[in-house]
Amino acid sequence: MRFASGNVAAADAKSIAEARDLLRSGELVAFPTETVYGLGADASSDSAVARIFAVKQRPRFNPLIVHVSGIEAAERLVCFDARGRHLARRFWPGPLTLVMPRREDSRLSLLVSAGLDTVAVRAPDHAVAQALLNACGRPVAAPSANVSGRISPTTAAHVAADLDQRVALILDGGPCRVGVESTVLDLSGDAPVLLRPGGIPIEELREIVGPLAAPEGGVLRSPGMLRRHYAPSRPLRLNAREVGPEEALLGYGPGSGPAALNLSPRGDLLEAAANLFAMLRELDRAAGVTGIAVAPIPESGLGVAINDRLRRAAAPADEPLDWNDERGPAGPCVLPTLDPGD
Ligand code: TXA
Ligand code: MG
Image (cartoon, rainbow, N blue to C red; front, side, top):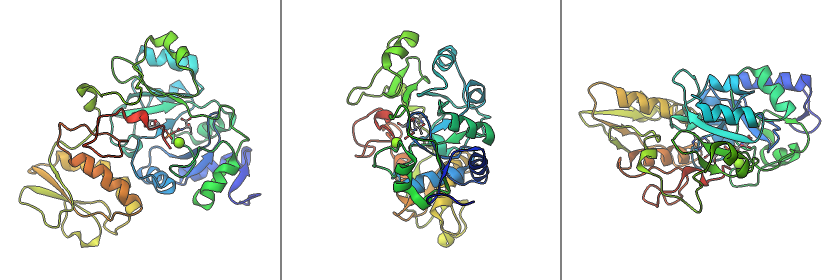
């Protein structure tokens, strides 16, 4: 297929069908939503989701928003309660993202929720996004379609300027109507927590769910919330060059020898990122093992995010794991969501 300019194509039936095929084959597609342009990947594919982090050059595996056409599709991924249903009926499709417990049978990539047992879902209110989601028939993970740390794109030209050839196709659906990201509300605990202000005013949410626990400049996370951050229960030893008698080795690259599991025998960081959470879980369950030793991972490309995640997972169990605190696990405890996403 040829495009008018680079990888940008006006969104029409033909380009949407092309986008569907690309997503289904694990490629990335940028598409318009009412808030900002999203960088989409098949949310059930570990390797497609890993590619998002690579293309955005994200230094962290932050959890991503999973886009669906509506409540029915979302019910297959997460466990709704009455509050969630009420909010989704009132505001979807629209700029409201709801964080809810992940269903065991969701078949979503573990990387999409960065190993958490919750998933953020939203139904975008944009004809092109809806057409793409319906055509694709799969949930689509999508952060904003910009390189990490840059401004979120609200036109196809912004996306092209940032990502250009690194994305298979950019669907042009004109400028975004809302222009700021969705409001993110965490419904996985007893009290709804506002994780990110956005396209839906807080007042409108309060009318339905009552007072929100709104983090202002950083709120201490209650210990009860920590359980939602997945870390192996077994001790994790990093940069391991040899393996102890009761340790399982999580290898990387061809030089790892007889590892219990290898993140990427050929030394491909994208493959390693795609395997990370699933392999950590597997070794945490493996019989006859008391600890997990992880081979050195190069500190470049996706290796930075992999090492960041591993360092957090290796932190003592009573230390909070915080995804967005630049100072690392020893820093103060801040709600993960104070990061507006990038
Ligand atoms: O408007 C939007 O929301 C755009 C468009 C493309 O839909 N997407 C977007 O995604 O802004 P992203 O990845 O840049 O922002 C995701 C936000 C982050 O603040 C992240 O921490 C939070 O959602 N988030 C995602 N999953 C979460 C989870 N399971 N628990 C807590 N926070 C989560
Ligand atoms: Mg963003």
